[in-house]
Length: 457
Image (cartoon, rainbow, N blue to C red; front, side, top):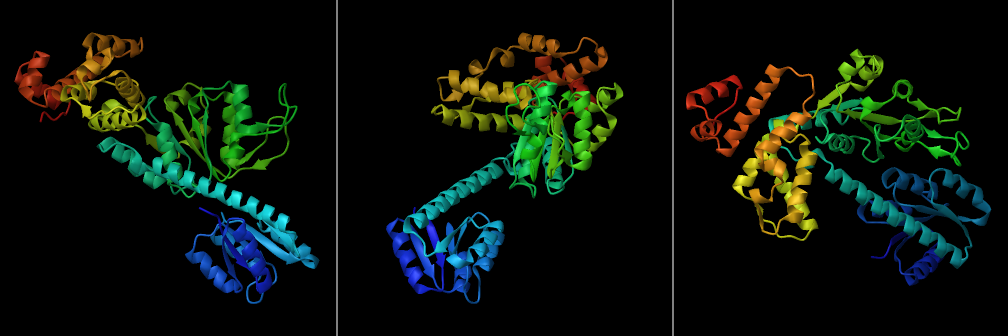
């Protein structure tokens, strides 16, 4: 599809010349000698590039530029001006004009400028489409989970997104904390800005400082050029600090200053740089315990913990497991060009009853493995990995995950609760069958259902 060029000039001779020249070059051209009509045309039509004369009656080229920049910021504007009025064109560049052309112009120069503007417009369109795609992909409405636990999380996302407040997202590894952070960003007024993610555990303290704040040339060995840090990259957008509990004491102090003053200094530099950012942070650590142990600054914790979002582990949102499994099956079946139709009821029972220590990330990996290795159209129990279907393997992996120092009574109650839940799921919530699986009488099972506030049907 050819680029759409709108030309505004009250001199009809120039309109005719430009129309013929740009049409021959393959552009779709709309020439108008009335700038007011041109502004109305912009509101009704797709335009990629605007070429406007600087001096026109009723509406000047400067006013056209201001109108386009205010309402269609992605559309480049080329200013045409008489040779004696170059200063005005240069002034227009300060207000966001893409370029200017002096009349009379050289044809090659004009075509080169329009080509650059058209390429710029195409890139802007791609960026807008990509941003919209990301916005759709990471919208809270695309997050899979219909149970009470995730419903509460998404309600908080909806409330927190429009604000400027810092959000602390907590939860076990693999629960989807970054997904929630992106949902907050793309539902916020900053969605047109960058979403910059930093894993604070993946880098050493010195490297992380340079990544976050940037550095000046020569500030350390290997710093051969100035580098912008992640805070600068996130200007007018959102920065997501994952594994925030791993920050060194020195970086905690520097992050506190950023949160308080919204200013940074590059490593090795003295210039103070203001940054307009929203900070989202995530951790799988208990930061309250880290504060009590003197490992995390209390003042930084309170700066981060303005809005708190606790991500539930997958074992506490079992009603979402079949939905998530079906979603991952559809994705990986498409990627691998395999015609899977779904899961057997028995496979779903095993998936639903499993404890999922690795949470959603582990479930995703399991489903991908099943798709790659299975040859049928339905994922059955035989296709599941050993840890999902083998009780002895489950017990061993569960014990290995437990800390050495535990409260035995509380731990045994949690294990009993998990076993009762699993028996109910595999028996399709038929109490007699569940009691038989557990080697209990029906009345004793009913007692345990009341004890753990479980529904038996």
